[in-house]
Length: 231
Image (cartoon, rainbow, N blue to C red):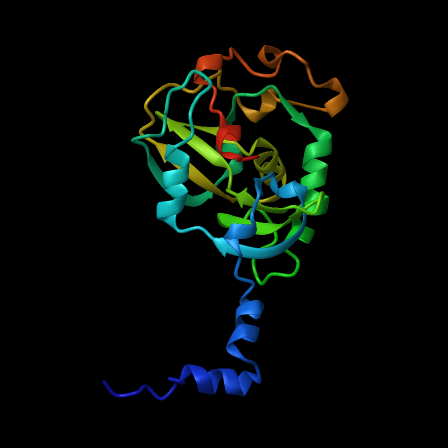
């Protein structure tokens, strides 16, 4: 096969960059998975040292492993699609949006990705693994997964990411989401439009989980913490 005119040998490429192979590995910020000790929420990473975009196969395998609190696996045979969706058409199962959480997303999330050539707004951010040190200095890994939206009949319901979708519903015509279809069981709580959701402070958050959701069925509640996913 003839060389293409833009083809460059690896060693020549490195020479033109004036760096060694080891230097180039450092530039790529490849993670050392053997040093990772904890899986933590993204907000607990003090600094992000590496970002790896998830393949669909990895993402969908992860989502299929999410159990309910009753031990069921609602997404074991589900279908998944990542696409843009109008956040205003989404329905919600929880009664409240917490002011401190959506303010934190607006103020802090873009800074986490500031050193990487990637979308810094969650309306466009794709699924990633992030690696770095947590606030105790322990090497850790975090997920970023776009809002998870379950399709039940003609309804699209937010399963995870209500605060991100709340912001998007007031600032963007579309938001990136993972749509989950052909689910093996009903949504775990009642379904309501945005107009029935109240914005409150965390200090007003009800202690009883049943008071935070519409008609909650705990056995069907999706247990994202099982895999360390934090919305």
